[in-house]
Image (cartoon, rainbow, N blue to C red):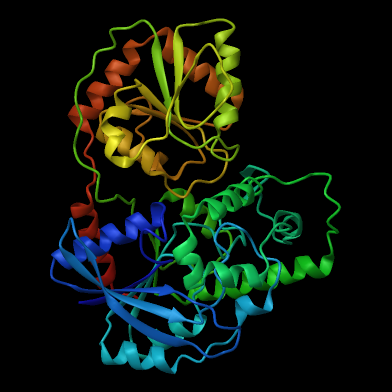
Length: 454
């Protein structure tokens, strides 16, 4: 098959879970003999309807020795990344797609697999309909439903706000279109890792998950209406796809609240190329239970939620440690701080704790850390907001708990008071849980490509 993927771009310029998944999936498809293209939103010259296609030199993944056809959209729609939207018209611009039409037709593309709606002109989906190209969308984020991609408000899961009133405050720090144009430029690509821009990014990112409840932003009804219009625009794009690939039951539940046609959707849990079976039996020889947390120091990922629970437990029971792998300055008697890690250090990281906690307060679309922990035989406690809770067999390889401090406290106390439970779950994982590798997952995706649709 001739398969075209659409995502935000290539490493090292673009990074993150979605990029890794997309790259690993393309590699596996190429290994199976398919012809694979990556289409990505590139430079913004202006906000006119003119759109061009630029074919770059094939992107080589040295360690895999594979080549991916590398196609840039010149003058796509703006890409807001995590920053939100406060100007509307340019995100719904009509684009002239003559170049795209010719390219898709000449290359005889069979499948367009879209991994995000950011920067994607709706006209490309319309062209695919004309050319009988099957379209797939994978739910890596909530962009389209939410202008900030994460569907979170002040660090917790956003409610089903049909009127988009919360969007006004949540997007008050959105970047201007001129700044977004710079972020999509070649100049930024070359300067991205400079010290100056790293400092600016840190300052900007510190505002991403903070909403000032006392903000003087006027909840203008007309602004709410514009956000509703923007959401409607994106929901129509979603409904135009032949198949929606939900990466978890969580994303299926949330997307189905906003799109009318859910019959074309299917849940398939995902994997990535570095997932391998590394499970082994581990005895708990120490009376101190070691709890692991692999997320950043943010509210939406649940760090402060977990910290509050640990502080309450420590007042009664000191037989535990919380191991984190991030920069954090506060010294606490139960807290063991490790430096941030790279993926090739994950095996060593997993040796530092007995059980992983993923305490997300936002609706995590999936969450690779759960799959990674299970692949090493580690039991996992997740909140019911975590998409990869699909992998948890309750009380066998882990626990699913509500986002409630008391309930998480009770569950952690149960584990700390009876470490044998960790050994039992570790044994169950090693002997009964099959870890999905990318080689297995690609077969599921190829079956999805061939699935007959109306």
